[in-house]
Image (cartoon, rainbow, N blue to C red; front, side, top):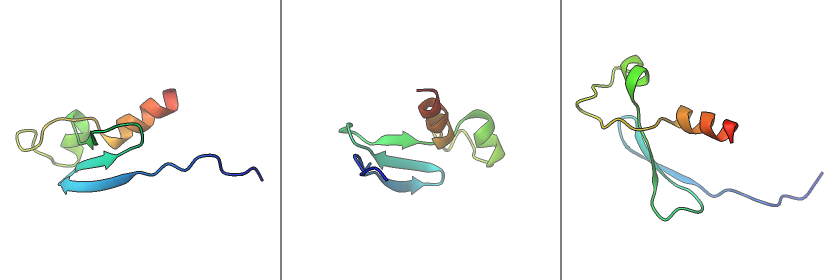
Length: 66
């Protein structure tokens, strides 16, 4: 096996409901994860109570495309 050359150190905090914030390498401000559109509707989240924001799924899709 090859030696490990990188370990990502990330911390995630659940703020409230589906809202999460993550400290990730290379950023001084946390990344916010939330819900929007069809995903909010699927989970029964009232858009008036939560600001629309990218979901963890959105970030995964973007990472796979990068």
